[in-house]
Length: 164
Image (cartoon, one colour):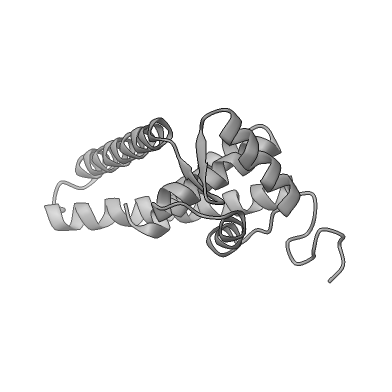
């Protein structure tokens, strides 16, 4: 999956979390997994803002990071944080599962198209299935952004105190 699709899948996962802390934990996990190297709190905050277009409270994210360290999800070394190996494996399993789901969806739409129009060649079927898949991702990405905005306690155009 390319970087934009990964963001979409991550946004979908964030929408499925039932608490702010879990959402913030997912943000940290996904950034660390995507970057693939240890990051400081400040680097994590900056990447969350640039990659997900949201601004989280630095005190909340710090609390979440240290909770993740205590739960052995992250490890800390020299002021930088990284995923423990088991966390990396869990995320990789999710990525593989999502790739399988995407492949099955493409196969299902291709089979459906064949029953509707048997004159379509393989390239046309592939193009339609890929276009359909991209459309679904765009819809989910937009809904994911809306969900993130809804669950954040402050407007992302404002700082933590609501002052521009």
